[in-house]
Each structure stands twice: as C-alpha cells, then as structure tokens.
Length: 369
Ligand code: SF4
Image (tube, rainbow, N blue to C red; front, side, top):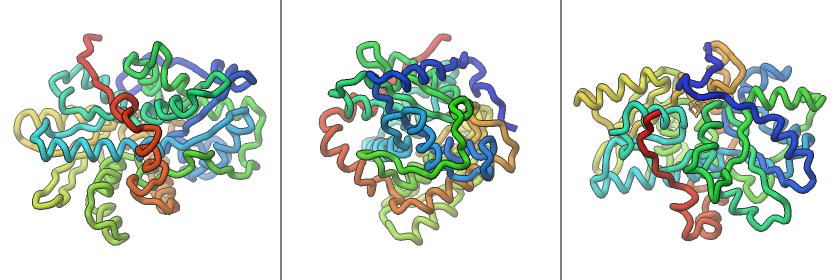
C-alpha cells in the first residue's frame, strides 16, 4: 500500500487549499495552474470514475469552474527537463564529467542525497524538476500581467511543497511556484465547490503551452524519465524503435531495473530505482565498485509518482492501473518525443533565450538538517 506520508519522513506537510481558494476568488489575481502527469490517473477512484483513467480533461474543466485563469500540463515542463538532462548526460559523456548522472526531478531524493550522500551532489543533474522549470517559465511568461500572478501546482507529492518553498526556487524572495496542492487536496477542493465531476465535459489545456509529448507524460511512473531520455537520445526515430525502447527493461513496477542502450560506438548503462531503500542499496553497490552506470533515475516513492504520498491511497493493482493509464495517455499523444514538442522549440528560441541557466537549472548543497 502507498503510505500517505512523505517518503523522507521528515517533511512537515503544509495545507495550501485556503490560500489557493483566496487567490481563485480574488479578481486582481491571475491564477495559473499546472497539473503533474500522475494526478490525472490518480483521481478517478475517488471521483466516481474508473481507477487509473486519464481524467486530465475533466480536471481542467473543474479547475476552470473553480476560477483558474490558465491551466497547463506539467508534462510540458517535463519535456524541457528531458532536453536539458539529455544534454547534460551527453556533455558529461563527451567531456569526461562525473558519472553516473543521477536524476533530479524528485525532491525527496534530493533531500535524502543532501543529508545522507553529499558526496553524490556533483553527480546529481543540475536540472530543476519539471514543476520548477515550468513554474519559472510561467512566471516569466506572465511577468507583464496587470494582475498579481499566482502559480499553483497540483502534484501527487507532499515533498513538492517543500521543494516550492526552497530558497533556490525563489526570485527576489518570491517563489516561482506559489502553492502546491496534492491530488488529495484537489479532490477535497472539487468536492467543496459542489461540482459534479462525473458530469463535466473534458476541456483542453490552454494556449500557449497546450502541447506536450508522451515522453513528458510518462514521467509519472518509475522508468518514465529514463524512457523519455532514451527517446531523446535515440538516433532512430521510428515507431519500431519507440516500441523497442519500451520493451527494453524500462517499464514495470519493480523497485530496481536496469537497461543497456547503444549510443554511438558505446553502450549506456542505466539503472532505475524507486523507493529510497532501493536507492541506498544501489548507491552502496556503486560505491563499492560492484556496479557502474552512466545514468541513474531515482524516485523516492515505490512505483514512482503515481504512488506519491499526495495521491489517494491504493493497492498494487491500483498502482498498476495508474501506470497503465499514463502509458495509455502517452499512446494518445501525437507527439512522442520532447524535442518534437513545438512549445519546447519556441521556448528555446524566444522566452528562454539567454535564460536557460537562470530558469531551468539549480545547484544543491549539503544539508545538515
Ligand atoms: Fe514526489 Fe514523485 Fe518523488 Fe514521490 S517519487 S516524492 S511523488 S516527486
């Protein structure tokens, strides 16, 4: 069963729904919401819908009725993460940088590394998480708004509240992501609003960030980040190759997975772990010399974000339904690879010009507490 506690066991869970209601009801505030991949498949069982069903369209419709001005998909931010993380891996491979490169999108893993393994910080990707990349992009996009802009992130995760409050993710003391609400808090807010969720007609994500790739959507399940990065790195962009990547050991709910993928004239050795105990075991094996990898994906929650502490509690079957729901959502995306997302391309040629480091990257330091 998923535990409804933070995976690090050390994060005080702050409730943000009152502040979000205040922002939604204030005509002088523009409320911009982003929704993480795992949320759309985590809400169904509690809202009279099928467990694991992709309910993104209904969530967008509900948020619009509650007063949100713009609603976007964190998968668009994940597409940026794929681009930056793949670049970073290639740079380290080519220039002989620190390997393995550990992923950085899970804040509970980051906090664990800061406290327990500061020696690994140089190995951790400098990429911000998809939520923080997208939060920074959205604040930049609406910086000239005549209204106060409040960024709200709906996340499967309690650790994301801590991440949003970190000093690294503030500009002039103001967070890029103002409030994080969990899937459970969103369910509570929809119920409080009196909306009949099952009767809502699905609505599309808003422009100008309405595109996201399937690679960004599968971030919500263990192995998803890896699969997305391999799609980016693969020279062969055929559908057959996409299938080959999916069946090469990246999918499945096992706590530790490995795969090897050819890259140029060498092979990339990759590990994927979910659950901090599995992460610790893998770190021990790497540090003792028993194992070696080029890339390591770490998710603190067993199974990945689909089973985050902010999601409704479910059993193994429920977890599997959620991950199947995300793979089905990937199938429905006409864009499969992050580099093919036109939003990503236009961001690089416009809003992110000269600001990639400032808005998409971060440096973590050792933490005593
Ligand atoms: Fe949050 Fe996902 Fe990490 Fe769990 S695995 S702590 S849900 S980011």
